[in-house]
View 1 (tube, rainbow, N blue to C red):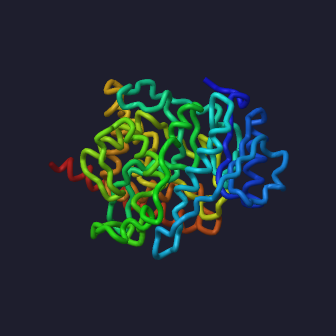
View 2: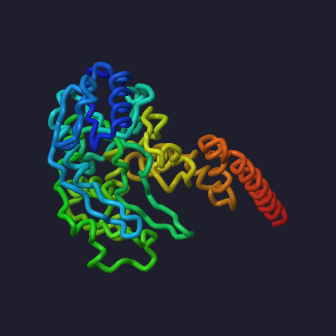
View 3: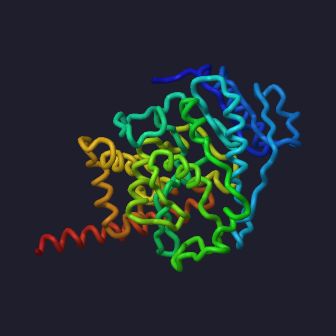
Length: 357
């Protein structure tokens, strides 16, 4: 059922940036004209240029951030995300809440028509009254680096969330982490030798912390010590909790896009469809944990394709042609043709071998 913008409170959360925050707030006002708009940022921020672009202003003490990546000197904004989101959500007055970052922009009102077509939920595994909608960029099942595959449990993107007010409040009803112990965890703990994130010292990412902390409310015996704590039981709990409590959608389904240069051309569809929470991945888990009666022939079809050599590379370059900058299109076209030839040759040889048998 489509909702109206008058049923919606929008929490725009994070540090303000002159151009990005202005574009974000203007886009919310344009496409969600009757929504309550709350800007939640830090005390001391210059917000004078945003007058008239929001209905409520929330200014919080900045809890700060600690470096978690010793190579790239990146900082962990987990407590910042938590504090500014939670304090902004406390001011919401509408039945539905959209929480987005200050560097995201709406291109349309698609989010009002987002629809959860997964009808069945396991009540014992469901924390929220309804599934919360989340973003697919960095909603990961696993990541691959230098031919190493690493599972990433509880890794649902924290870029934006949409759901019932009471559910979004519950999502951020978690404790702040103790710093610098959290972000420097692996300075005093042993890492696995095959960890693909060799320079990351944090206990886990913000995405994992938020999802795991909520899963702990349902799975009381869950023990997930850090992002490397991967075992059969934790994998099962991660999948079970996520599919019963979240639905993940792509940027074009949301109508929401990043203004950050490094993320503008990020496209999860170019990955292996089962490495992140694509629709097919969600459908597969939905059958496994919620409704065993549904058919997943489309899932099975793609799983078989991925077993054929070069299919993954072929599909990747096909997707990238549509999203890369113009100067990179020639390279992608060449790569596409190369892998198309390799894929067809492999397919032909497999069919030929089967016939000979």
